[in-house]
Length: 306
Image 1 (cartoon, rainbow, N blue to C red):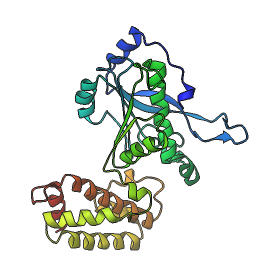
Image 2: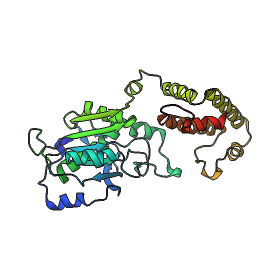
Image 3: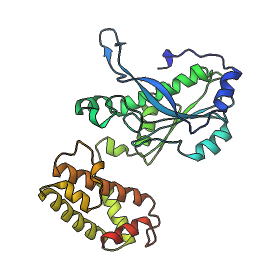
């Protein structure tokens, strides 16, 4: 990647343009749909399709070549604004750094293929294009463009105009941050990975192990919660699967039927999706359930079932 960019001398125009840019105003970067679509005998890229990736920048505190770049990694959700004010307002100010935050491919408005419900990507496309490797290449492409073509940084690590790159992520983005440092040490100088599920992605940990932690946390907030939730959800799943029209059940449990995606065509799929929403909601509530007590969102959710 580094060889693909030629450093430019930074100009006052670039400096002012980035300093005056609203950090929460999205920008768009032209990406390859498939970064690994290459001709094996020549190792050259084919004429791959392109798409526009949404991203954000904060150049308010950047003091020119020689200062660091923070790459804040977007994860498995839409990105409507920049995350982590601590980075933008404190670390960037302290180190006079530039901040870049791309939205992860296939989330939010960053859709390489199949951008509508009637034009969903196939499982084959997702298996090939929705991967950590593709996501890392997306984010490094944006970063390298700014590093050398916008900010005027030197590619020579021993130069006073070299801009160290620090990747930052939590959870799955934390995994990407660690992998970027591991896979591309010539590009990434520091990788900060918070709560990165490295053992999960290496398949050395149970993929459902976190839900055991959620259950224990819920029990501490409201004893008997886990049994009450499990019993209620089993009854709901049975009613969905056994119903002649699962949309009737959706309406009974408060789901607007006109919002049910078109790919949900059977009671079984609907039950799986509904249970996933409940699971993810409890998992999110668990992150704020500290210390566990009876005055948290987790406890209130438990009371609904109890």
